[in-house]
Image (cartoon, rainbow, N blue to C red; front, side, top):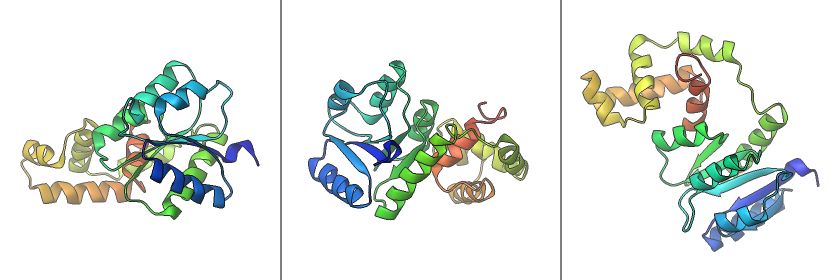
Length: 204
């Protein structure tokens, strides 16, 4: 088993932890399971290989707190977070701490495997150094209003507040958001945030 196929699975819901581990093992991953973030921290070493998949809402220590602790200890490993309560603020916080992907529950088994394989490949290729020319080119396709919406999204504002600030309907903001995702070629909220934060205009 290649080290890059190791998955460290962290979730305090034991039934989900075990079922996910069983599925990933059947798909050829070498799975290490932990039913708390603290147990994972107790076992982790600087030479850890593979990737980490952690739930966000856990007792004792949240997934985001786990990410922060790993970064404080300068432990470098690709991380995927899983949440049933995804929002732009969470995505921004996660991306700023180096999380590479965020899966929103419920997600398919295919989406999980794709996320792991993409994350590992990106990490192995140099931690996914963004193609800034391509990203900036996509940004140039956004209208002024779409950039205004994107800037507010990256500040963690919900659609209703953005609509109020821009004096438009919530439905209009939702339409702009969908158009932004399409023009930026972002397959997920996490990817949109990650790309945007890599640019000088929005956070680089």
